[in-house]
Length: 539
Image: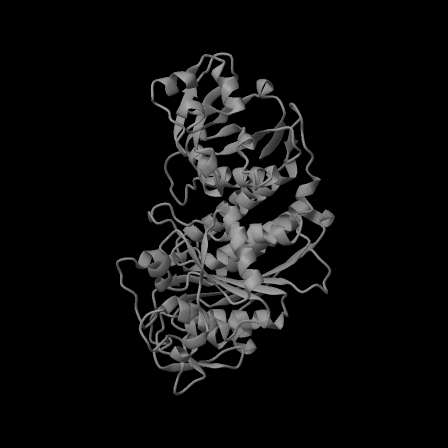
């Protein structure tokens, strides 16, 4: 991926130029941004569309012109920005997602600096635009054997007088991490099993060592516990859930040390159920194929550590992933079984399809052993959260007000929305068991997402902790577009608000036509993932 910061529109050479038009300017007519005015001087094509009533500047409205005389572009994309007083992070991000459908490939010149929100700086605009454009333009071929592979954007030019090259690079790294997570999400479960997740984490470390070498200002490491080590550690939740499968569980610890070793880490815990049939409490078959996405939390937290390393964040960040399959068999966990977790607490298993909280209980107990400064878990935990919030908003469960506020701000910044949900209190009584310390589901009806979060709280570290239920947001609502990599944008914005990206700041602003060439994680990991998929498919 090439990144270039240009300060003169007239000197640009690119396959695609993107300019904006506001809705409802003077006399109610659409108002052209400065770059749109410059384009319109080359033949009045934009003005003609407006006068004919064919373009009104509504949010994400698009007009595409090809071979505009006097301009060195294959296509010019004119995108509607809506009303100025209604322009928001949501509009800004959705505009770039829409542009990705038309930009297709090659080089793209963005004039988005002209649309920056008053409350956001250009650095935010740069990283957000690049992140969303690259992620939305990514189309995976998957395991298809016929047809050409999809084309991709190879170069981004940012038209501005401001030094935002480092922010553009942050956007590239963020997009690469999102693509990496999505590709893991989209793999079939016969390939992406617990061992595959472990190999993916190990490949991240190998690739980082290969590209960063000794110059890296930090260290990326991975530790994988096999079934025997998990059992010896006392992780009864992980062992119990995995009993129905012939595939052994693993427990992954992927760690980036970007600060002094004495600094308490940020611990991210991700649910890694690579396929969830429900166990003995079998799920309905109609939508069971979607249960390959039950490892989305694992993909997100590992991708977050991957990005933290590539940006060399001055932060210690650890991803903990309990990875299992939840299948029915003669050896599977049974309703009414009692397990002993890593924390020592016993749990009565009333429903084997409430397995995510059992493996997260062990992972959160392991997080507590690391004495973190803050802990966040990400899990496709409950269908109840989908009932409550739908498929656009993730559930945020947190009793620490500063952490709640920080995550809400990051969610707004990334347009990766969350909604605060209740937990604890009276919900604790609903988890009482007559034979164990607590039950894994509520004996009362309703509030399933709230009681699940309350269950996790019993095992969480004694530090600020948040639980993100992404059951409704981890995959696209359409069912065909696959994983969304959410809430990775939120987590990365939150991490960036805590610590600077030192490596990204090394990238220099390039004026006129001097390009700053950087190889992003997206290209590197795409190649590595393809090799891994071919290897797994050949087994």
